[in-house]
Structures are given as structure tokens and as C-alpha cells.
Image 1: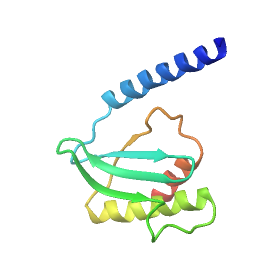
Image 2 (image 1 turned 30 degrees about the horizontal axis):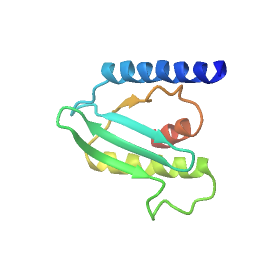
Image 3 (image 1 turned 90 degrees about the horizontal axis):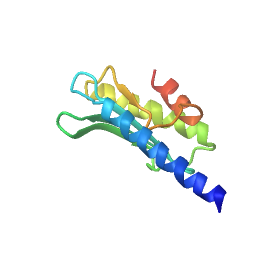
Image 4 (image 1 turned 180 degrees about the vertical axis):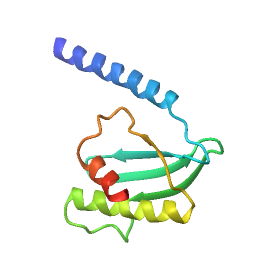
Length: 116
């Protein structure tokens, strides 16, 4: 049972780190927040203006136009390119990355490289 307790305590600590990170980040109209969520199967990304509470652009690997790509890395790159196009169309040129407590390695990095 000691191993399980250690996992629970570690997850609680991570939630605290996630909350502290999000409190320090705030997207504005000039530089909105880029939020990336990666599940085991899909990747979702949004560009959010926190001052108005609006989502300016979003993309997901579940969209019909982006679905059907082989491999998670390829779908992450496609989501990044689609989000970059939609954000530019909304007039966004710079964003603040909300990594949500994640270290920032893996498919999320591919997504960010595709946007640049």
C-alpha cells in the first residue's frame, strides 16, 4: 500500500504545480495563451484570450480534416499547422505557452515546431 500512497501524494504535488503554473500565465489580446492537451490517443490545442475568456483558434486531431493520419507524431504536426493557420487568420502572431505542468517533450514539441 505504501507504493500507492506515494503515487497519490505525487499526483497531488503535480496538481499543485499545474495550478501554480497556470496562475502565473495569462493570455492577453496581444499575446494569447496556447493550451495544448495530449491524451493517449488525440491531441487538442487552443489559443485563448484570457482577458475576454474567448477561444480565438482551436484544432484537434479528432477533426475530420485532420483525422486518418498515420502516427501520433504526424497528427501532432498536422494539428500544429492547422492551428497556426487559424491563429494567423485571427490576427495572432505571438502566444504564451501553457504547458500545463508537462515537461514539454514528445508530441507536444512536434506540434510547436510545426507551428513555428
